Length: 313
Image (cartoon, rainbow, N blue to C red):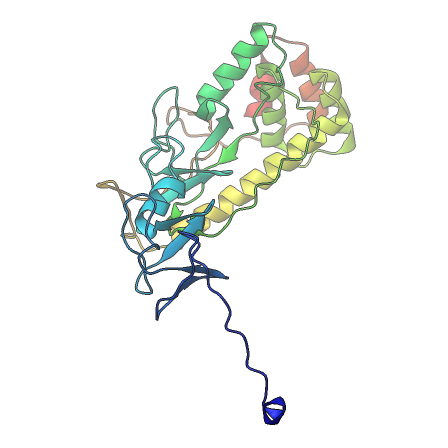
């Protein structure tokens, strides 16, 4: 009867080893977060059989345990070009979800290395510089294949500065399916681009009357013309900001990439080369609205005609 007043003894929880499935009677139990328990002799890397304890980092994936070296080798982020992993001191270039070594960040067509400020396109078959991307797009259009779903037109992107490759890949990733959206992309031909760029050089913010003239001359919709001018102004503004930032740096502030030393530069828009001729001052005799000059230019196919020369001068 006297035993009834004693506090009940707590039952000792049974610990089962995840590795062998047997009960753990050892003095020490290795516990892997959150609630996995192992014999000291059972907790080892599934690849190299190295014993894992409290002195090293352990990774668990699909029920298997790995040391840090093998986990990074098997599941760490790898270069999209050479499929080789990154060290923590590497600098990398990113294109959407893909990561590249600086040396591997090249156009697949001409093998030219893409540097910060270069425009490029990411397609299913790799990276393309601006020139080769335009060639591929024109070839697909001339072949009568109007941008099939397998090879949609890729918007050009601008290469950013290299960033550190310190492994963010060790944390779990949640892969979401991309949302299916249908976007109609307008591919401009050479004459349309030339007309828009000429007008932009004369006036980056055309008025409504000028836009109506551009609609008639190019055959594009008012929305396409409006968006083109907005994107062009935004791109030039970003490029101007980047150039100012580079100019504010020290003259000897250089980057060393794979043994090659150079100053970071941003590719600017092409501009006409006048052969060193100096312009002479002229007296304005009369005024002609810009839309009238564009209208005359649209009726003439020869760029050497006076209307075009007057527009670009």
